[in-house]
Amino acid sequence: MENEAKVKNRKKYKKRNRLIIPIATIAIVCAGVGAYFYYDYMNRVYASCVVELGGDVTASDFSKNSSKDVQFTKDTVISTDHTGIFQVGVESAPYTYDCTLEVDDTVSPELSVKELTRTKAEIPAATDFVDSVSDLSGEVTVYFGSGVSFDNYGDIPITIVAEDASGNCTKEDTVLHLVEEYDIEPPVIEGQLDKTVYVGQSVSYKNGVSVTDNVDDDISVEVDSSQVNLDVPGEYNVIYTATDSMGNMDLKEGVVTVIEQLYSEDEVYALADEVLSGIITEDMSDYDKAHAIYVWVQGNIGYSESTDRDDWLKGAYDGLKNRRGDCYTYFAVSKALLTRAGIKNEDIEIIPTATRHHYWNVIDCGEGWRHFDATPRHDKSFKGFYLTDEELMAYSNEHYRSHNYDREIYTYFN
Image (cartoon, rainbow, N blue to C red; front, side):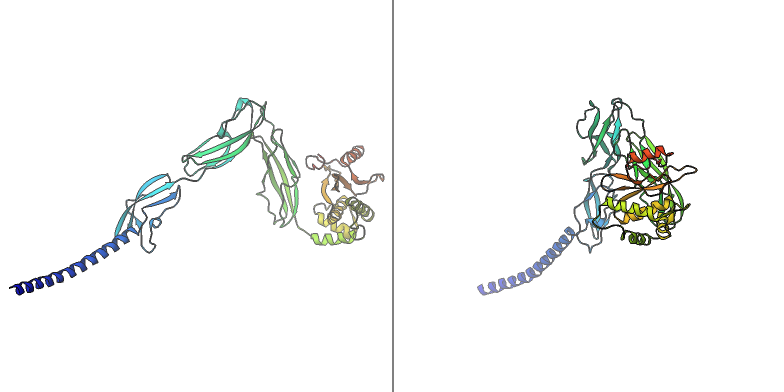
């Protein structure tokens, strides 16, 4: 009996073992599959995404796995126009996720300011100093960066602050010119507004042009050269404008003359170098070089009338080649020789009349500007070398205003 019971128990145990193995196997498989799907679910997308205000965002920004397709749910509306935390739905088949989109604003406003001139009766607000201000949030508060006292006249330092809704700030410094009387006087544009340039070359419109004002020290000149075509010979109008801090404006018109270049600088300078090689040496001072050039021009160029006075390179070439010409030729030859000798020089021209026109040079040998006029005159006592402005003007006033130039254009001696 005892043996029969053992046999029966052994059979039950075997049957039990046969059931445990399949059940355990199924449990392990289920657990593995569950773990896989759980891992797959958890590693498809990020729970949240941060984007800058006004930035772009797509469903792929939430994706952890680039090999999986993701998209926003149909009921999800995406906007980064406002800061905050927003709920979004992200689909990655077969799953759907509830995620958050955080829109932050960490960029400060863009701010530019200007100087102002006011009286004590017209104390400005902080916004009056603003030239331009912008921010993606569209909400900007402008205020003074520190306490400002308007008790004293003069230049008052001002700090302007622009702050957006997220607390990002931009600071810019400027100046308030506090004056006793209201400024109604416009700035004054002076200088060489008319330019001559060869076809295809550029123009330095502001070179030789200056602005002065009764209050403001630093006023820039704006140039409208939209009508100029540097590829076609002709005369073109140019508009110069200058505006002070009170809005007073000066407007002047200049003319750019575009001409064909008949001779190159290399051709002219080659002729000039031939002359210089025989009259100057390296150990000479700039003054001595300039004097040697003056003597050579007066002694080697014969006077003859001419009406060709637009192209200085042509004037210099003709003068150096043919050794004849009028005052423009003397000026142009002197310009070429002075330039090649390394002497600082500029052009100057008389205020023309119906019967008279004249050109000459000014030079700087280290002692300031001096007049250099190599054109011979009927008055044999005149020597137009290295004259101060006072000396030349004294001569001019005694000889029918022979060198009456426009001081608003040529400001060398102002």
